[in-house]
Image (cartoon, rainbow, N blue to C red; front, side, top):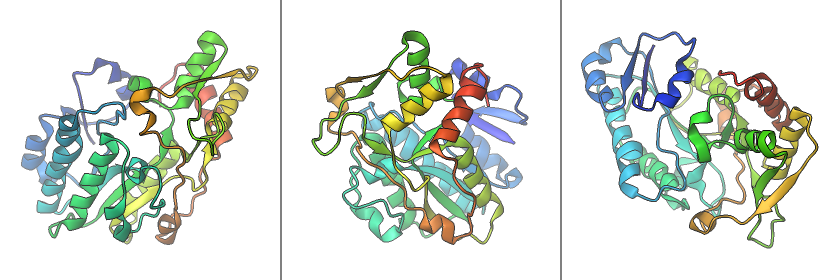
Length: 296
């Protein structure tokens, strides 16, 4: 196994503790290495990206999320290497066009921020390609939470950030709603545990008959941020203490109030495992990882 990451980011080193791999290659060096060693590679999992929804410099996303992904795709296509890459539920924007992973609907999606647009741009580029890897899967991850996200700071899940707020202050802050149809804290997201995400990735690795394409990866059931944080308090054995703050103005008009994956397409290709419930996933994450400062 070859790992690829920003090796200059020292805070990520704990992610590699107790992991077995052949080599760790920096992201800038990898495309050249990959082109010269493609014969040794059986499959590529391209999950890395700039996922900062508060970053508005389009050049950052063009370089890391679009052009870099095109380079990986082109090498996989040239050398017939299957590819699994990370798309995102951020492509669905405010949900005006729904949350269906049918290819025909991709072109009408309207992401709310440059991150979502970068994922949308690459998905659209992929669907235009005539030269493709022998199998490819663009996985539209919904709100993923779970171990080893400590390096993401503001972009880490509200399980991680909520846990640390509660540990430090006894309370957690959630965004106040700025839409009359949603009460404070009742904004809804499809929260999916990272262990389930891993199972889906392994399914596509092993299931060679699954048709190539875009697939939603979520539980199929939206839950509120209030539900999420109440589960964190319960897992920590702490009384619920939730406070509300305004959504920062720089992201207020780019904030998703509802996401919910349609997963019929994933089920139709044979993925039958149940998704972990929010309460069970949060409890496992809090008690077995965050509480003991343990890595996955």
